[in-house]
Image 1 (spheres, rainbow over the protein chains, first blue to last red):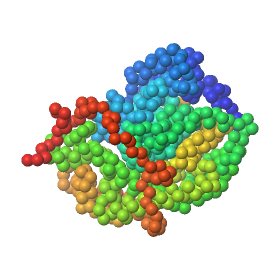
Image 2: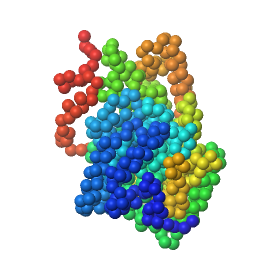
Image 3: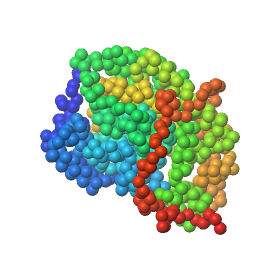
Length: 512
Length: 107
């Protein structure tokens, strides 16, 4: 395949909803269409695709008001509306309904927050608003982001646009389905154990989870605070780079936010274009032996092998590495994440906000029944697991043991990065599964995260990018993992791969 | 380790979590506790795979930023928040005169 300038050569011929963010930015400034027209186009697509159940709330009036404001800024044409200074000005996007949005329902897919109108904007939302982005709505998700199929939402399951009998993945399943069906050019997501990368893989998208501390967690409803990180679901790496740059950065209101400058990801991607066709020359990709085992479906393994061959053709070399403790990732994660969740979710008590049980006999009854009525089964399971592993007599055997394993898992990655620049492997062992297939068996559901959750335990940045299709025409995701704080290397690799391939341009037929 | 129905009741109490709706019959409640017990037993069976790995002498890691040796910041001891009590109480299920209302705690 030849190198093409994706933004200029191919995009402008595609319909409006398949344009890249950069193409929209140019078109808005050429007055080919206005932000209001663009926003109406996506709102109409959202209305026509209700059966996907991708959105919990569509914010049509607010979106049109934001679009009008963006059009005024574009018409004024000052330096603040320049495409480099404001790449998202007038661009529609959707937020996972885990981010607080002032004056708009913020449900977290839970009955306990089914009446919660957030009193403030999450920092991520605020930053994107100030960048001039247009919020078209709040997307569906697994309840409190606890799930890998988007089936635990109190708003109902989301359907995968590639096959509506299958799950979109989770927990950012609504964001993934919305972007895959081109109901929004891009959406925010959150990733605690794979919740951006796994749905990106299952829906054929580019999804990035940045390094822990890169993006503010303020106003992002907490699930597991040492693992949660906000990120982006997009159709391509260049779009993801633009949005990540806009949402990242230090926030004094988040004590774990890193006081570091945010690299200019879009500029780094642009400079990686090599006329030689070998833009990845000098880069070494580590292939963790543990990610290429028998538990990977044959079609997935074939797609990953082909993707690695493509990356080598682009100049990268590959080396086998070992992550010997990676098998402990799932057990370790399913102690630590529930433990942190059980503490975080203690705030939902029926007193200050959210659902409150009627006619409580006393304060304990109020707590127990408000929570019992408000939380779904998976959330209750995790609260109970977390409460158990933190309880007296079990703390050392479970919680402390998991924290020690977390150190070993992080050390494995550190050693691997001594011999390579990034790691690659499948994002998931298999493609999208059927709705209902794993809802009866929590443990089978947990195993979806086998290649993703160790990355969160170590706080590393990682992407999933589309790398082909299986024989059922379901997307396959390639995971690229970067060293701590190095989002740029996997983003550049993804961008170079996408300039040489067109998997990321494929759209489900019904939504083309 | 297998979890019993009695343990489920204790954990649910610690977590202030009514696992079955109030109007549920005793039999249905028992069945629900039984199901949670079975599921939690399966989950613990999964997480006990941790014991296959020797962690003697390994320092626990609670947070990825410990790896970067990035110390958590302490902010200056200054008032930075504005008074938004009215905004926050507007979304409360029951508030009056600036107070959150709960069932009587002290007789």
